[in-house]
Length: 146
Image (cartoon, rainbow, N blue to C red):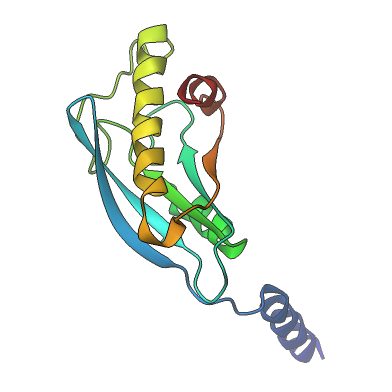
């Protein structure tokens, strides 16, 4: 009796998600302050793109957040996520000792701006609204970047 109920619950879960097509993922690279930063652009598949967003990290050594980008893509939003400078495949030095100084926040804001410029010129996003999203330390970085 429990097994058929489990099957119904699983089928309901997949039906609720609509079995959405897997998003398309493109590798991207961009330069900020002499460092080449590496990321991924996650694009909705099978639905129109309504906007684009650069996801800004919180504090710490953060790599690109593909899970977050996939959630944006599920909502029709193209998302660029990248490895913080000095982390993953991004060049540059990660600033761990003075990560909240004005100088470091300005540097990370410039990285976010370079990511936004890369997103804005993507061929599939012509005349599309683009902006920033993020968590934690992004609350300091995004206003400076904007």
